[in-house]
Length: 215
Image (cartoon, rainbow, N blue to C red; front, side):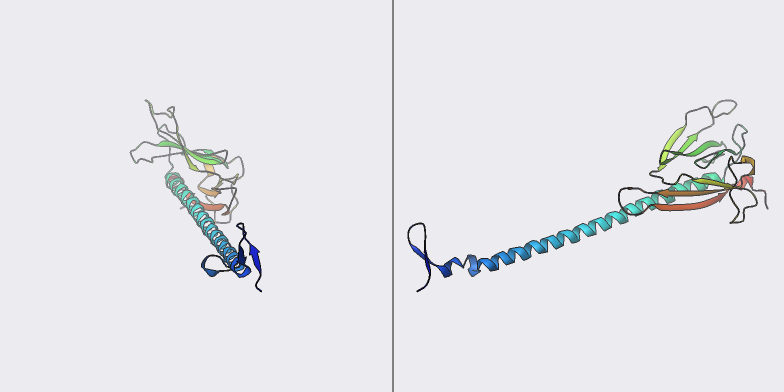
């Protein structure tokens, strides 16, 4: 005799019927299907997260590279053409490991702007002061812009004299400004310090064209 169970109305139902649910699947088959479905969802979610994280790393690294390259391009172009200020000041006025100040005709209008690159906290900034007055001077307001955030290296600028051959040691501190003929710039930046990618380092060197005396 087949096993029977009473239902709430006092009737009987076959045990075989209990094993069957929608579509004729057994309870075990249904639970197994649900478990597989949940597992697949977990794998897909993990895969999607991995792809998103990888893309995020790539985007961050590209942003860092673009910021660094743009900053160096501007710095090199302006430092290369450094020359005497509109007030007669020497082309280079400040030369430290975290700051350099010079004069350059960045607008190609015959007037020399006072340009200052300097590190404030972990941000590399650029200051620009236009010559004003009569006689011309640099007493006006300085326009400051941020160039590179999250700079991690403490020494950005190093200075070399006319004898630099690629291996020559940098000029000692305090730098003899009159001896400077070449400036090396090194920037290490980490746009997102709490996660990958790793910090990116940019380095270049620029000759002060109008001070060159080793022809």
